[in-house]
Amino acid sequence: METLKDYLEGAYRIRKIPTYIPDRCSERKSTGHVCQVCADICPQNIYPVGKRKRPIWDQCLKCGICAASCPSRCITVPSRKMESYLMAAARKGRLTIACENEGSSAKLSETCIAAVSWEQLAYAAMREGVVISLRACGECSYETCKEVIEQNLKELRFFLGDTLYQERVTVLRAGEEYEAPAEEGAMSRRELFGFFSNLSVDTAFTMMPKIENARDNGLLFRAMLRDAVAAKAADCEPADRPKYAVRLPHFTQNCYNCGYCVSACPNEALRFVQGESSFTVAVDVWKCTGCGLCESRCRSDGISGIVPMRVSTLGRVAVAKLPNHLCSACGKSFPYEADRDTCKTCRAKLRNEQLKKRREERKLKRELEAAAAAEAALQEKSLEAEESELKPQVMEAEETAAEPQAAEPEKPAVKPLNVEMEQSYEDEERTDFD
Image (cartoon, rainbow, N blue to C red):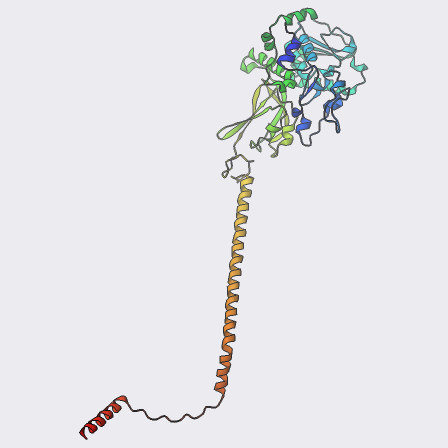
């Protein structure tokens, strides 16, 4: 029979050591957003800092503190830690969690309670309740882990609300004791192992959350919490369903569906659903860790921050419905601007076309002016040439006009033609008579 650990390593591909998913790391995906939580919290300093690019897995203690502290949940919990948590959470009664140094008979003993994320605490609280023993923390010198524990408790209270937190969560400080109710019977590890070993793989899979792929293994506990919330909601009427506090991005009217925040999200939690005259911004709540990368990547102030919201489901919810601002020239979405119906790109193209047209007009005008000037110069040159050719003749005419005029000889009188003809006829007749 396949054990739970084998099932986790086979079906979910969860490894024996923490799995680092680089393309979901906020430090890798951001430009300017600095996150070194894993490097700061790791007791062995195996995570990359400075010029080191890869974690040193040979020195890993498999404590799981890094996975519980990562803000974007890009580190997967080791299979042994996952198995121990599931086995402890399945036992009857409240889940008791304590540090190994305390030496108590807690159902879940961890190297450090900081290795238990607030999602794990919330899941246990949703089932039957959780008891967190911090009695050994006073003797611990690792202050960073104490800060992580207090932050996890703060997030747990924020998510559940004060009323449910007080009902389902018990925190034991130094000198405090916990008395389990009589109905919380104990189950030995052997009995619990037998309980799990008798389940088939299909039944065990139904107890585990459904995720899209192995890249979501860092969000496995959030998926378990999603299913627990859905199971609670199924037992209530829609109006009576309890609501839980989460932190989600707040979208404003400046959002125009450019998609930069979608590509920036390390867990692929954002979706844009396009409509005819508007679009809807949807968020997978269980995937959104509130890292803030979407806000830092937004180029139009379309996200005004990561704000608290109360939801009745950790599935996909609509957080905003915004009108489409479509460019009348290209048809694409663009940021809303009063008295503007075209985007900046199209306006820039139009402005460039106008400038180009003006430059061509000025160039054509200069060419026409140059051609007119050249023609005028040519005409002037031809006139000068003509003047230079006519100048000697003019000078000669002037000289001739300046000389005295000689008397012209008298010309013989010219008889009219008819008189000459009559004279010739008379001469001929006289000759014939003679």
